[in-house]
Length: 63
Image (cartoon, rainbow, N blue to C red):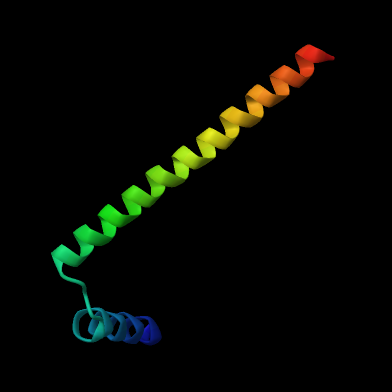
């Protein structure tokens, strides 16, 4: 039990005193970047899926 209490105290100290927490503006810009990258990635994957789907439909109809 003593090890658990020591672990919690050291963890709390590290989180509150030693971790560099980013500012809100940095978090917002990072979140915006992730959102834009995710949308672009989804559009690329969706476009590839659309093209492959149509190519396979065309192939199956010609057989």
